[in-house]
Image (cartoon, rainbow over the protein chains, first blue to last red):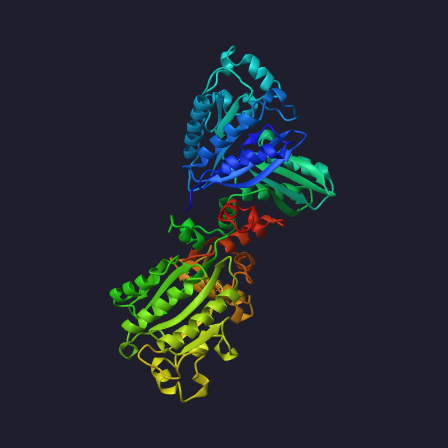
Length: 301
Length: 301
């Protein structure tokens, strides 16, 4: 199987496409790397880029992007609604195929060291790459109350903010969080009702914060007249999509409604779909090498 | 997405591995082609080889194999239980990814013309590549009552046996059927009972010949004390695996039993698993480009 790592860097620029063009050109200059998506939000003044590459070079592409962003984006001039702390704000590495989370942690840490040393940008490691428990959640590294301006004041003064790599001194490129996390699946389920309160009750039942499944974030919405349970599945290997949808199905039945359909927002790893097929079909002897395409790709057969 | 055609030629040699080695070497000498499997049966004196390749060269690999087999296998010396008619007996092309059945028909016909002309072997086109309705089913081209010896006597004498390509004269390499068909999925379902009569009744209910689903062949067996519904799914794009298993689930319930597990025998196209996931999850907006791996491969995103 091909080895694929996904990287989803967020940049503090969402209004000048020519800047993003140059960042993307820097990413694409690296061998074996491919940009899948870019999405800019002018209100947040922020752009999310999705690219993939092999473990050997995906970190080099991220480095090229961070270097380019540091050159082109001046955080002293930046305004936007979304919390932000650096020209390159966050850089998560995501294992997609043929690589482990540990591989991604290694890529994140190697990149962090290089960004600190060569670019002089303070780096915080987060999620699976974190070195301290209070840096696992991005929200604790970048709370709304501690963005670029506060970082500038506190890094170097308050030990809480000593970076994992780089100088304890914030320049115009700000600071960057680099980490590793599982693929995130954005997944919505539509119910056969227009009663949004049912979607809200189901969302509360299935989500982690409400006592539900460990790797589910969920909210209820009304979309085009249909009650929708809108979710982020933050680790499909531990809380799989089929278990979530079957739990919603059962909860919906309790209110006398059914699932009308579901939808993906954005991308999904192949593995999440294969896992669902194997579970529903009860394919106890399944191995990846049984899939013709995997045989062709080489590794598993 | 990569374009992948599978080819599953059957050769009339299952006892001398050195012969099969040379045929496989001929296949592997062609650029971009990869042998996935070989399976020899000494009683049938027959070998099935599975290989894949791009539409441009998969036919060249099959030609190289047929030429090599014609050189190494003398049908006058061949004995075996399975019906057979040529050194290379049948050559089906199967669309796996990014190619249509029509593409495979074209590959089959081009190969047929070349085998007839350059190797002087009579060729019959079958299944989706057939030119006559009485040649769609391989069983009508190669009935147990009309194997190599009968072909030798009748081809050139009886118009029924005039080949699609090549001379109306049978040499020591016999005749070859070349065709195109959908991927075949060999799939077994185990029931929570040791009563084989229930598996037999369910097999009869779901299979085409018993009035069931169009592209299902099924039989009931007792395997390790469990009743098993053993199936060949001959066109999963029209009779999908999830519809078959859910029909079996319903029939089993009627006898008071459940599905314990299921198993694949051999390979399955990725698409069959993705189709099952999409159906069970009710993913109405699904497109292949939503799968990260497909984006990376290139075509669909």
